[in-house]
Length: 453
Image (cartoon, rainbow, N blue to C red; front, side, top):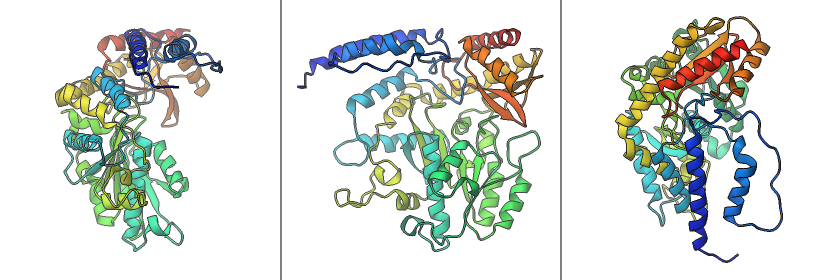
């Protein structure tokens, strides 16, 4: 195959048309695709980029969800603003490997973007940040850095010597996200190293007295406390200031999982819930959630980049002893993830981003109020931020699953199952920049219809 640069124009024109047609359908597209084809692509003679795109659209496009749209409320999923989408397309066009500082300004764009996001969240300047693929990777980097740091206090270099003969480490949390457990498994700590701590009655926030007692019992032993800033089931917040006090007193590392909750810093109504986050040792935040940039994009902030580097340093003669980004994450090859975020910050500014964050929070409360008016539905928790958790008043998990299948099958809205306080429930997370009041009316109508079916 010989390079023909005129093929770019034709292929990109076809892709632009496909993108425009798809984006125009988002408000009416099925929020979740419940049926889709399973046919495999044909192999054989090459057909060219335009024909390949046409074949993909004919075979698979109908099975794509409207996950970038206003009523995809499963998990915590943002969309892609026009500026973020343009940045993401150009990140592919530019195709920079943001692994080092040699030969490209891309790594400087990342550093500048990290600095702007740090300021957006109101974090002190001594937090070093780096882009990773998502909250799971961010939590992994944070816990690896924490492990390196807490063992270093005991004279043990985990990155160099490994875990052999190292005293057991425990991770304490009230309601840890599943990605914390995944990170613990990957790091060799083991899922059993998680020590659950009691939560407050009717809340998913940790009980501070229970945490104080647990930390006191672990005095002098390697300990990481994982705090929630936006717990995944309810959007609840741990008392970060109180946890920071306890961790300082007992020599524990404080990691704050703020995958979406860190954006509360942009809301005058909710910002106080982050009081104390500036005293954390590490922080996770996902950008493909509330910043509404395309997947995959997240940040990890730490105060001890030297410990982070000790873990992730890539040792090789051709790499040298630099401060290149590849020495601070599991990846050597790194996509130009900062560009969509940079474009978003420039295009909409703090006020624009804050506007959709605050709107989503307000609409979550409207949705919960509407659910309370539907016979047969019970809202299971206060709306602490942008998540609504509800259940059928009568029925078990099987009844919940049948209800949810009917709800999602209609395509007007997409939600996911959960269990909260022992009740099988349904969870809706609003984090899309497009979501409006009219979408709440559509979702409530879909809930009523699913109850009747």
